[in-house]
Length: 172
Image (cartoon, helix red, strand yellow):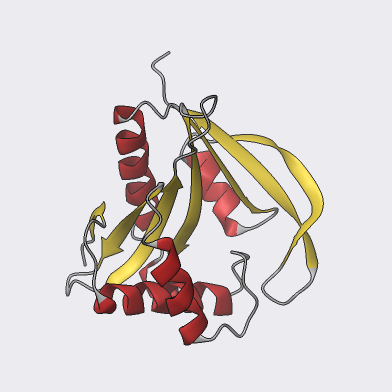
């Protein structure tokens, strides 16, 4: 099976439902992405409906052979005069049934390319300390900056540390 990855420009109710399904699957699978399990599908729909109209962010999606969204990542574009060179990566989500097929790698590659085209040459992200995502980010050239103890709650409501990563996009 192949994946089609691209920027989500216009979207419809089906896209929102598919994004919500990915988010619910990730949270139910234990991902610490600002929500607790069990996550209600309606809460995920509400979150996406608000997020997708934010003019200062972009969303990329990975679609399966049948066109169903199985992964996503978002780029926040700070608007402060001293922050227009950076971007904040968030909601890197890949449905459990689509993992191991390169979705995260391709989503981040497209996000990084587009960010660089628009002058965003310093990216930052955070993830749960000790999560599987850490290995992915390190393999993709992200640099671990440090940990903040007891910063977030796990999907089960337990305190956990958060690890911050950064990546520079300027040629060396």
